Image (cartoon, rainbow, N blue to C red; front, side, top):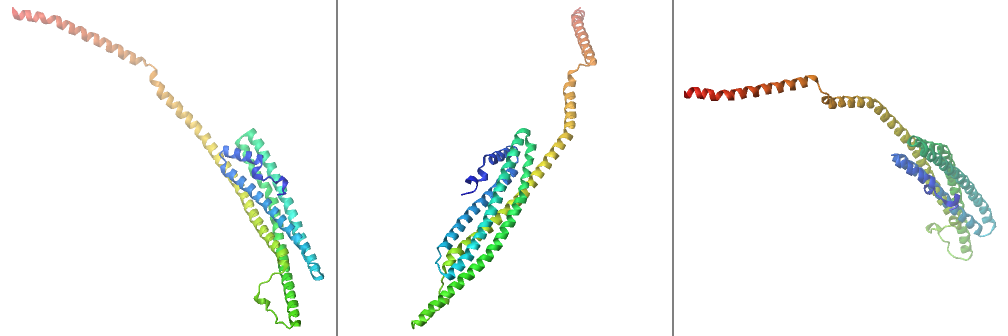
Length: 306
């Protein structure tokens, strides 16, 4: 892998730190969005490295093609097609490296501010949307490369067919000269060396470009999703804060009333003491009457005896 020291975004320390911060602050959806965006960028790097291998192989195959006047003219056209693809690859590679640098820069800024100011600062993760323009530009470049490659594939396939048919015609001409029957090559599947040397690598590159476009489509959608999730989270916390502001006075009032109910009986009322004094006197008077009644009973008995 020849992309910027071969280190993927998902393995960058600053990205891992950002993901950890988001998860700790209950922003799991945003963390997942960031991880997937980084994964898509990593995928683009891998596709570019694979393209490099295919184009290098194509270049070597063209050089090794048999030397003759007809083939030399074809080699020039095929080399030009290979160079066009390589130039496009270099452009896309440069654009992806710019995206990668911006992702790391944005992540570092969000992490630094998130550590200093807390959860609210993590909403700045929506600034990843700033790479959308770059991704759109890469996608346009990839679309252009796909169109160019389709044309080159069609031209190369036609060239291989003409070479194959020319070779078959020449072979039958020699057979006729040697009084041998001609061969019906339409019943035989034969491939010209150009097919292996150029056409196969071109088709492989086309397949990679299509895959890159799908990666770009998904990463652009994921950026929009990240921005939406940040906005929804922000609105949710604003609503919760507003509800809490409205509830706090009500809770304070309820606590005040509850405190009055709980502690009111502890305050002594003068009437309660008066009532207790009266009860004491009434009890004392009752006891005195019972005592007098008890002393009078023996006298009644004495009178009855007499």
